[in-house]
Structures are given as C-alpha cells and as structure tokens.
Image (tube, rainbow, N blue to C red; front, side, top):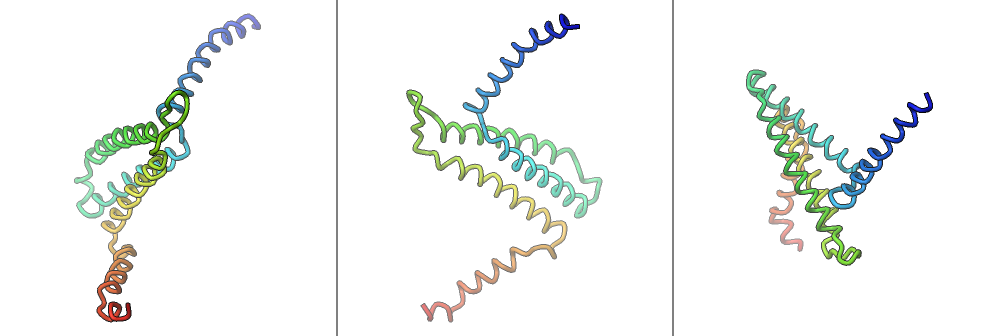
Length: 155
C-alpha cells in the first residue's frame, strides 16, 4: 500500500508543480483578482437572467431564444480580453520594475464593467416592471432643478 501511495505522490507532484507554476503565471501575467471575477460573474449572470425574464414577460416564452446565451459568451470573450489588457497596462514591468503610468486604469476598468452590467440589469428590471423605475424620477427632478429659471437667478 505504501508503494502504491508513493508512486501516486511521485507522479502527482510534477503535475501539481506544473499546475501551480501555470497558476502563478496566469496570476502575474494574465489576471490576478479572482474575487473581482466572482463579482463580475454574478453581475453578468444576473444580466442574463433578467434579460431572459424581460423577453419572457414582454414577448412571451416562445421568443426566448439562444441569442442571449450567445451574446453572453461573446461578452465573456470581450470582457476577458478587456481585463487582460487592463491588467497588462496596469502591471507591466521593465527590468523587473513596475513602471506603468497607467496603474489607475485597473480600478477604473474594473469599475466600468460592473457599472455596465448594473445598468443593463436595471434596464431589464424596468422593462419587466416600469413601476420599479426609481432612477428616472430622480433624473427628472435633477434635470428640472438644473433647468429651472428661478435657480439661475439665485446664482
């Protein structure tokens, strides 16, 4: 039994070593923030679910097609490329030192993707039930305040 366990460990160790090396390479050169990826995945899946629900409620179940799934796959490809190039711009090194003048791009880019998904989910929710449109009245009130001639006289 010990001999079998020893053979398994002997063959597994190189695999684990290679896998951990690949993992380290991915984290350094491709993308490292797995917690952010979880948040983004939740947002994308919520967008997909609310998008399917929107079609189901507004047009009927017969109009729910695989198009939403195909668009989600395309979105993953686009977001993946965006995240990798953003990670590269923010973390590239010259002679072993991080010199990127674009380090701020990373937080901005990550936030942008989450905001895009949040906006899409919000639009889907409003399309399902317009009574849940809490943003439009707020924007209308702000716009009215900005355009109100009485406010212009005060300034």
